[in-house]
Amino acid sequence: MSVFALILIVLAIGLVGFVLGRRKGAALPDAPGAKIHSRPVYHGSYVFSWAVVPAFLLMAAWLAISPIVVFSTVERRIEADTQSASSSLGRSLVRSLGQGIRALPADEQVGLETAGIAQIKPLFERRGIPLPGGATDAMVPIAVEKNHMEDVSRLAMTGAVLVVAVAGLFLSLSRIAVRLRARNKVERIVKVFLILCSSIAILTTVGIVCSMLFESIDFFSRISPSSFFFGTVWEPRFAAAGSQAAGQFGIIPLLAGTLYIAFVAMLFAVPVGLFAAIYMAEYASSRVRSIVKPLLEVLAGIPTIVYGFFALITVGPFLRDISADINGLLTGNFTGFIQAQSILTAGLVMGIMLIPFVSSLSDDIITAVPRSLRDGSMGLGATPSETVKKVVLPAALPGIVSALLLTASRAIGETMIVVLAAGIAANITLNPFEAMTTVTVKIVSQLTGDLDFTSPQSLVAFALGITLFVMTLILNIIALAIVRKYREQYD
Image 1 (cartoon, rainbow, N blue to C red):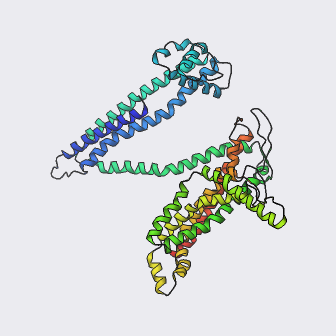
Image 2 (image 1 turned 45 degrees about the vertical axis):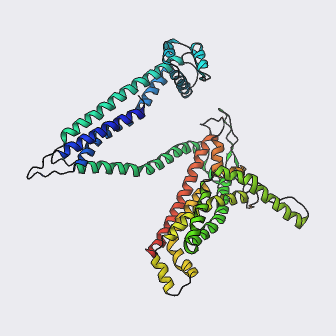
């Protein structure tokens, strides 16, 4: 039985328990001196919780532990029965073989426990199933055994989960009584559920940090942190598996490119987006606002790869041709001083992409400023522009800073626009007309291709990721300090 079908069955059992519990709660006698504590709906929810929650917890634990047990057994068989391939490669081949065998009809799977590659190859070819390269005869019975263990585990899980669900239903039904505090118990379960939901973001962040941190520690055990953080040359020299070539991993060119391109993008997006927000919030009529705001927000829905194409095909060549015409008029040499792939190209296109982030968030923040502040300013004789400049914007500043922080984080993490508009050259330059690249582009580059994922050339991607994480964390701390300072003045 599939997991989805099992979930539906457990939910159906829970709904049956809810109906029975509610009906039994409604039939409880309201005896003198023993007033019913909870309403029938809480009795039904109490039975539903006991039928569903333990069953789902058991299912989650089983699904987490079962693959570990199965693959530990498979790994022991691989080490004992095969002489080639590492255990990780052997697991991958056995997994692929097992998936292929499972795709065969049931009658063709009979007798494969003693088969070899020669026997299953025609079966795979007849069904159009790719045969994994490198698989050996000894791996076929291991794959069959793995499939059998998974089937037994799934069957046992189904039985155990259904038993727990039914047992929880009858046990909770038997406990329904006049003074049962069903409401308190249900509310406690809901509170725990809400706490778990609120913890997902924290746990996800912890998981991301740990996944990057451990690999970064491995990288820094091979490469000096000083050469990484203070090096000015980025030449990782992609190495094949087993190669000892390390190269140079100076992050300074990547950090410079990341900050430079993000600065140019913010330099373009912040004034345009902020002025658009002020116009829509303070000056535009409701009709104009209903048209302009959705049109601006359409930009946020365009995929970044489309912005990259726009930069590569339109903006970059346009800037190059314009600079060539200007240079020709001034010097007679019609060679463009702006490269098609440059910091300016990437910054302008990224700025266009960021305009809706700034304008939409700032517009909502400015609109949320209390009307009483505007009326008080007008009552004292201030003009609309003075009101905006002296009252509205300072009051909205904490929210605007948060919006700009979100925009800056979006700019720092952009990849596709930079690849197509600024290139992949790790340069250090102050000239915005030349090409640079960013940290995110090199993270993709280092994790792409046929590389050894235990080499410094691949591990450096995790060091770059943790560095980028620390950068955004520092931005958040600075923004929170600014927000706290001004919020105290206008609360």
